[in-house]
Image 1: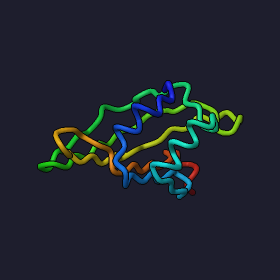
Image 2: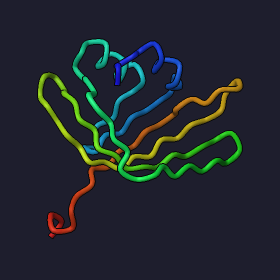
Image 3: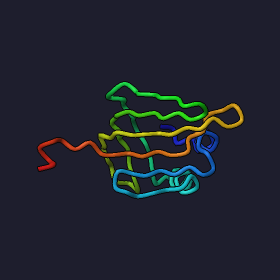
Length: 111
């Protein structure tokens, strides 16, 4: 939430890919550049369901649901999303290799 790109640079693997709920994809470099430029500002992240974590050797999959509030290029947003993060253990530390988010849509809005 502090947009600490130095910390994120260590957590995100070099081949990291982010897929947003609109289908947009970003590389690690693009994600960090967006934060450094101040385009993306996360104000709060609230976990709305317990995390589900599954470990398969040196790979872990983390699934959850949360509400994210912030600004993108000066425009405020709030998103109720499900997410899946995939981590790989390399050189004794866990690194994120991918994130995928899906916006939660009420059933009545699907029809």
